[in-house]
Length: 193
Image (cartoon, rainbow, N blue to C red; front, top):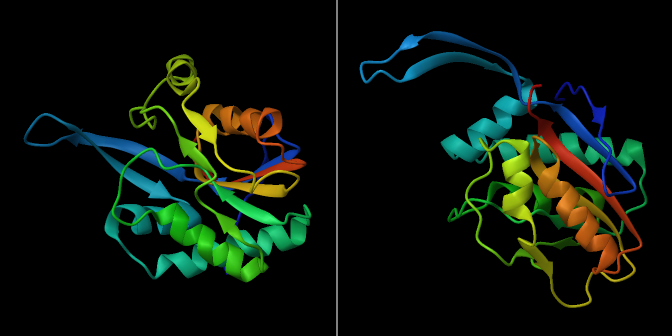
């Protein structure tokens, strides 16, 4: 069982949590032969699993991550009837968040919707973008389609909470034009700071 350190996060949703920090520490250890800074990074247990899945293609991490998330949701009891994923910011052949969502949905016996919220405007990867610039870039970047979300109590799932800008934009969209009855946010990890 993965050890978690959940934290409540507020925003344009009914209630939200992150399960743990992504990184515990990152220490500068010098520059490489090309002059690029190098760091020794220590991730949390969940952060390491997500890193291995996203950047090393370690498919064995999916079930452990999903178990940790679904166990938390079962204890939390938000009363959801649908899991909705945040659209990915980076095109990948296989989307790790989609894999996790599918397994979380299976474990919770709740359907997963990966299509009703989509990117309607291209944005750069937002991982290293300051909050003010991030807000500007994501303004109007997401839309909803169809009526699959109308009246639903959804769990909006993301892998990393940095500033909350993307989740807030989507939460507001879901409440204002998506017709959902409740939005609960679960971000697997959160950035330090």
